[in-house]
Structures are given as structure tokens and as C-alpha cells.
Length: 497
Ligand SMILES: NC(=O)C1=CN([C@@H]2O[C@H](COP(=O)(O)OP(=O)(O)OC[C@H]3O[C@@H](n4cnc5c(N)ncnc54)[C@H](O)[C@@H]3O)[C@@H](O)[C@H]2O)[C@@H](O)CC1
Image (cartoon, rainbow, N blue to C red):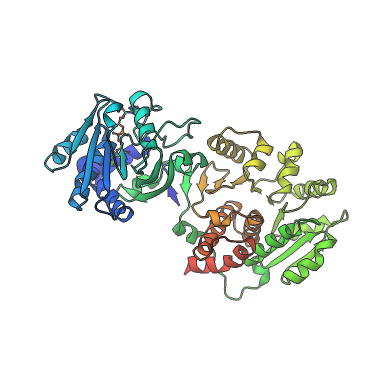
């Protein structure tokens, strides 16, 4: 897993690298510019493209100036530099890079007011006005420049971060900065990139290594972690010699109703394919034929008021909720499950029932995993104005109650009782279809059955779910939940190879 740092921590990483790796700040800037140009060349192969590089007066602008010079060296023919000169504070490395730039035949225009930009015509804008040094929302000339750039019919590529975009702490409701088509970001993505509101400022981002001290970065205290395949690989437990079905646990999935039986089948399929030794599905009588026909590996436990909960004590993992229904008898079952005092995986209708039964919510056994999407989460804890606040609540509740929240989104946030937030890096829009959540619940339950800790099951489950979807999406326009469940063993096998 990779530590994600705030801007001020990243500045410390810059300073540490400069001090301990005997590299000067101007050379570090040059490295950053080179890393940017490497990606830029692939994105903009046309050497005739009209490229306007907008440079501010800080180090972000310094990067832009170095990039202009390097692109010139790469034979881009139509480069123009616009020095956005709205303040007095020019950084030292910015000054040095202007001197270096002036030795080349690159047109440089000094912009003191927005009206001086009006003749600018470009196919590509490189946005190097303000970077991670942003300390207040854009106003005046800066805000006007941003809206001017946004109205141009040009592809915008931002250096490190789009001008006006906060790197952490949530995204302003009214975003006044530049909207970049691509952001080429240095060393680590910004924390705010992972929040859905970032679409106001960026369509996609790429991270480039500029050689900052990785040990320093990883040793910084940060609750934000980005899941990586390397980290995930370390979590996966190999299948053991001489093992048998009992070695891999017995999972129970309490799910399904007359019109939502598919949810139970999908969760059970995912649980089986994630490696649980035995999987029992507790479902209504009306689902037995479907279960026995489509999933012969699963066992059935018909659901009625006389469920013998004593036997549940021997189970290694219990999930409740997919397609369950919110009838009174299901509320009673949920209550009995909570009273078993074993960690549960709670999804879908179980979450809706919990939102109506605040008392049960606060009695959940520690290490239980809740897998809400945005609406389910807000039904539990009240409306949230934005995702930053939502994740803050999830983090606080996770810490206070010893619970784990798998807050589902394009980048799923896994909030742990130790206060860490793991941002899942896998998944894609081809997976946006019904039943995906049921499969995620099944995977997490299958992992818990195999004695993964709740935290590891949640982190690993979210990653495998998204990764299996990514692998399928390479060859398909859409990915269905049933296909995803079948892909899981292949994905695990590939990761551990
Ligand atoms: N050695 C380093 O520190 C490196 C820095 N790098 C670049 O440096 C950037 C950070 O540079 P800086 O810290 O100089 O800051 P910026 O270049 O982002 O901003 C410059 C200055 O603008 C002012 N400012 C902030 N918000 C404003 C607003 N809303 N309106 C008007 N002015 C505002 C601040 O006084 C700030 O110092 C990174 O994003 C990255 O591009 C890279 O070159 C890598 C190495």
C-alpha cells in the first residue's frame, strides 16, 4: 500500500530529498519536467500541435518553463509561453528557469491582465499557473484566467495539479479553477483526486516518479493509503498442501427474497469462487430450486422463523442483506444475528434495516463490515454535503465502534478501526450494473471464512472485485456480476504468480 500525503507533507518530502540525495531543487524541478514530458510525448504525438504553456511565478510555473524548453528540444514546433504575472512573488527556481528559457527561440508573452490573453490560440494548453502551493480559492485575474482556459476549445494538460484545485480536504462546491483533461502529477496522486467531486477539475490523471525519497514518504504519518497490487499480493494466503474444505471455513449468506433471489445466488457464487471451503445460503423456500440448479456447490438453509441460531456459532463468516427484503421477520433475523456477537458482513437490505433500528446499529459486534453505497450510508448517518464529509463520518464511526466501512464508489474507501482509510485503486465503469454489490459482499465473506481478518478481507475484497472487473473490461464493453464472480479465482491466481 502507498502512503498518500498532504501538500505540506509532500513539500517536506521535496526538502528531504534535496537535502539527503544531494540533488538541488532546480535539478529536482528538471527531473519533474522530464517526467512530465515523457508522458506528454505519448499524449501529444503531433509535433505541429499549437502548445501554449501558461506559467505562474512559483515552482509550478518553474516546472512549466522547464517543460517549454524540453518540448522545444523534442522538436515541438509551435510552442508559446505565457508568463502569468499577477503577483510579486517569483520563486528562485522560477527565475532560474526563465533565464534558461530565454536562450531558446521560444516566444514568451508576459500577461499582466486577462485581456492580454485574448489572442491566445492553442490546440494544447499546459497549465502550470498554480500547483500544490494553492492556499486560497482563485479570485480576480486568476479566476478569470481559469474560466478563459476552460472556454477555449483546447486539450488542457495540468502540471501536478490543475490550477485552483485543492490537493486535500474536500472540493469546493463552486469550483473556480481550471478543468484539465489530463493531470500529470508528481510522485503521488493528490488525496482529493479520489473524491467524486474531482470531476469538476480533472478527467483523468497519471502519476510520474520524480525520484522523491520513498522511504521518507512511507514513514510519514498518514491515514490515507492507496492499495497497490504489491501490497495486495502480500495479503493473499496460499492454499496449503494436505488442506481440505474444512481448512477454508464455512460461510453463511443470509440473503434473497421472492423477487430478489439473484442477489443471494450472486453473493454465494462470489463466496465460493473466492475460496470458502463451504458455503451455505439461508434463503426462502422459493429459492431452493434456483440455488440447487445454478450453484450445486452451495448448501441451502430454508429461511423461516424457526431458524436454529445455535448452529450458527460454528460458522466462520456470516453475511446478511443482499436481496433480503425489509419485512419484519427479516428484522428479527438480523437482530438474532447481531446477538450472536460474531463479526458480520452487512449489505443492502441489512443496512436499510439498520437505518430503521439505530439501537441495532450501535450493538453491531466489533470487526463487522458494512458495505454501503452513498445513499445507504446517508440513510444510516444522515445527509452529507460532500464525499469528504462522508468519509470523515465513516472514519469516525469506524474508530469509535470498532467497525469497518467499505464505502462504495469508483474508488471505494475502506475505513478501518485504527483510523486508516484505504482507497481502492481498481474498478471501472464497465462494472456499473446490478448485482455487483452482492458479488463484493460474497467475496469479502468468502475471505473472512478463510480466516482473513475483517480489515484484510475488506481491503482485499474491494481490490479483487475491481481488479477482476478491470481484467474482464479489457475485452468487454460491459461486465456482468455473474461473470465477475467467475473471474475471481483467475484474478487471484494471476496476482500470486
Ligand atoms: N522542489 C520542489 O519543491 C518541487 C516542486 N514542484 C512543483 O512545485 C509546485 C508547488 O510550488 P510552490 O510551492 O512554489 O507553489 P505554486 O507554484 O503552486 O504557487 C505559487 C504561489 O502562489 C500563491 N498562491 C497560492 N494560492 C493562490 C491563489 N488562490 N491566488 C493567487 N496566488 C496564490 C502562493 O503564494 C504560492 O506560493 C508543485 O505543484 C510542483 O508543480 C516540482 O518542481 C517538484 C519539485
